[in-house]
Length: 311
Image (cartoon, rainbow, N blue to C red; front, side, top):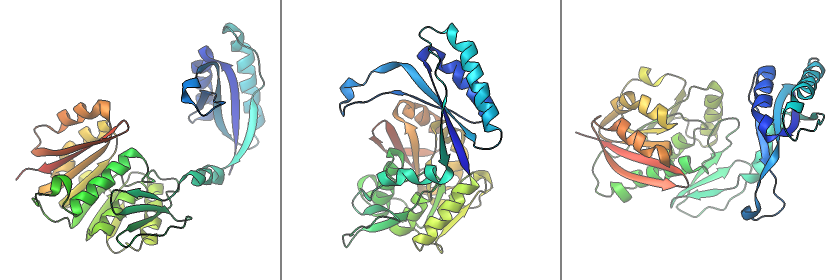
């Protein structure tokens, strides 16, 4: 499918009004570009008094009339904003595969922890003898492994399976079963299988993510050990040695009870996707639920909390 990226450059004070109009017109979100870099020094970055608001419209028979509507809106409302100069909206045509593939040039093999290596399917890599290679093509699902939230989960998983760090005391079951809530590209489920998990269940509310995850699981030869589904967490049967949840802080707290209910006594709960400023909010949300905080790790502006379910 071909899409039209329609860009409107307006004074910063007009951005909210233009964005609201474009959202109503397109039925989807907009992007706002306002930083202009002419050097590699971030010290030179300054907020511009003009911003570019971009909307994405199907390049079909209705495109012309919608661009006319945007042009009329700018001409009518723009003069009310200081510094407004009418500029005709610019249009660039994009294909869906452009969005899906252009980012690939920035995704390179990455080592996580001591043993895990995330390798894009289109890249070559020479592994060390003890490396555990995860072949990954995220497609339209979240999770390349390079984001801090995923990296923190992977590091915790490696230490858990190899009895390192907070798990060096040897307490708790040797992980055999893992539940991955919000599996995305399936990277955590695949890592759990590579590390030695015998049964891993990955859940996601997005059917497209499950399709991508299934292909990644197949690519890594873990189809016998990893199950993927859109089943709601509350409908999943049984308990697991490890429960992973790399989702937003508010969702973690909302799902605190079912997450813990699916954990065996002595099992490990790994929570990520938590902005450091929301860390105390999550801690408070899991207080009094029969779990003990084992360790807290942080990377960039993100936190990962690991709990053990009390006996």
